[in-house]
Image (cartoon, helix red, strand yellow):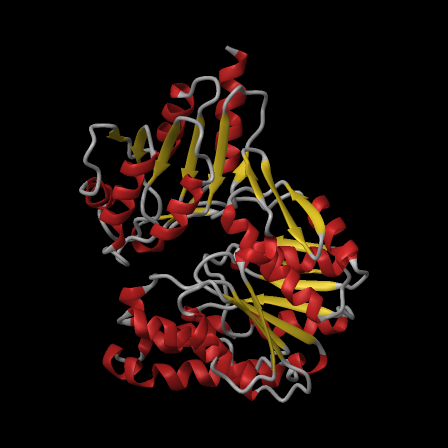
Length: 421
C-alpha cells in the first residue's frame, strides 16, 4: 500500500502536492486506523515526547513494567518490541508513518500486551502520524531547539509537541495521566491542559545523588538506587520513568530492582569494553544541548571527541554551536562525516570548525579512519567520545544512498585489532 501511494505522490505536481499534503497525511492515518480496526482502543498507550531522553525513558518504563509482571510493547528510535520479540528500527525515523504504527498496535493487542510505549516526535505530529492513536498517558522529558528549519521556528516546533498533549486531552480513554519534567523551562506549556492527573518530577526528587565515572546513584522515596547509566541527564530519564510507573501503583522495591538490573541502551552513552585501559563511549547526541550533557558526564579525564553533524541540509544553525561546545570540553577533536544526504560533507564539518577556536582539531572525513585515530591517540585513563550516530544503521548520502553502519561494531573491531598488535 505504501509503495502504491508513493507512486501516486510522484506523479502529482509538487506545488499541488504541498497544498494537499496535510490532507494526504491525515487520510493515510485514518486509512491505517480503519484497516487495523483502531487497535489503540484496546490497549493502554503511553506516549513519550521531548527533544532528548525519549529512547532511554521508553526503555526504562518498559523494563520497570516488565519487572512488575506486565507484558509490554514499545516502538521508538532504537527498536520495535512486542513481548520478547524485538527488531531494530531501520527506518531512520523515530515514529514510523503510514500503516506501520497501526499494524504494530494491532499486533500488540493480539499478543495481549498490557502496555505499549511509543516515542512521539514533532515530525510525526506534523505528518499526522499520532492521529487515531488513543493515548492513556504522556511523558514529557524536555524541550530544546531542534528541527527548526523543518518547522519554521522554535515556537512552531514547540506547538508540534503540544499537539501530542492535545491528543491526550481529547483521547476518549477514561483515566488519563501526564508526567512532566518541572525543571524544564517549557514545562508550564505541557501542564496547561485539562488532564486531571498531572505528575511532576524534579532533580530534587533524586537527592542525594552521586554521579560516578561508572554510573550513578540516587535516592527516591527513601531508597538508594544504583544505576550503570551515566550523567545527570539519565537521572532525569530515570525520574520520568519512575514518576509514570508510580502512577500505575508500581512499588519502590520493584522500581529499584528494575533499575539496578537495567544494563543500559545501545547507542546511548554505550561503553565499549574490550580490555582497553581507557574509556570509549558511543552516543547518539546530535543536538547542542545533548552533546554538552554527554561531555559533562565525563569530567575528570582527557576527552578525545569524534563528531560531525547529523542531517545534511537541516538545522545548519547548530553546527558552529556544536563546534564551540567541543572546543570547550574536548582536549582533542576529530571532525568527520555523519549523514550528509545531498549536502557537501566537507562543508558541514567546516561549518562546525567555525566554532572551534583552539588548534586542537583535525578533519578526517572517513568515519572509520576518524574513530581509528581517536582510539590510537587514547592513553590510560582517557575518554574517547564518539557522538552523532548511536545505533543509526546507515550513513545517508546523496540521492538517499545508504552505507550500512554501526559505530559500536566499528569501535570493537578497531580496539580488538589494536590489542592484538
